[in-house]
Length: 226
Image 1 (spheres, rainbow, N blue to C red):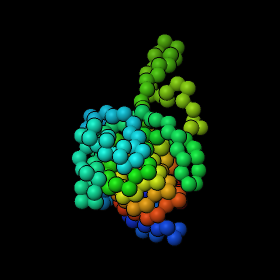
Image 2 (tube, one colour):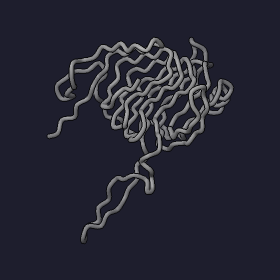
Image 3 (tube, rainbow, N blue to C red):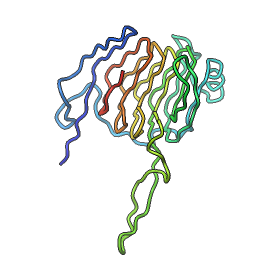
Image 4 (cartoon, helix red, strand yellow):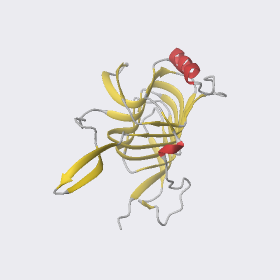
């Protein structure tokens, strides 16, 4: 029987001086024999509410969508906005401009140009599932497959933060994003990432042009890029 190995990063602190401080277990973890602070669990789609991709472009936009979506919170440090309980599979393509670059990204959740306090938690983010039919002689096989015509060269992420402050991402499962990162942080600070499971993506967490980012207790198979 094949054994999957995962790396559990206990504490990673990234600061604007460019140093990476990391405390981790020595080597891979076998889930069959190791007790983890965050135990492996089965995540069922039925636990979450299907939701369209989320794009927030400013503090005012955050307040407006909070009212429309009936999210909790007021955006303060003591009462952050709460985005939770969602199952997001579809993606949006967003053009963006910041002080470093101009480009576009395909992502499930994009929040940019905000400094209000918010949390993204208790959600499932993944690629959509499609069923394809293959005929093998007289046998018809139904199996999961990629969306027809889907380019493997597009940049895709699970959660993207651009020019954003004061965010917490916790207890989010991000799987099978393929060519992108589970979490991509660009030109942002005061970002706290904890208790997430980020698997089967091209990259685990990618951080660039950052201020302070703290990552605690998360499980990933993919590299962290700084």
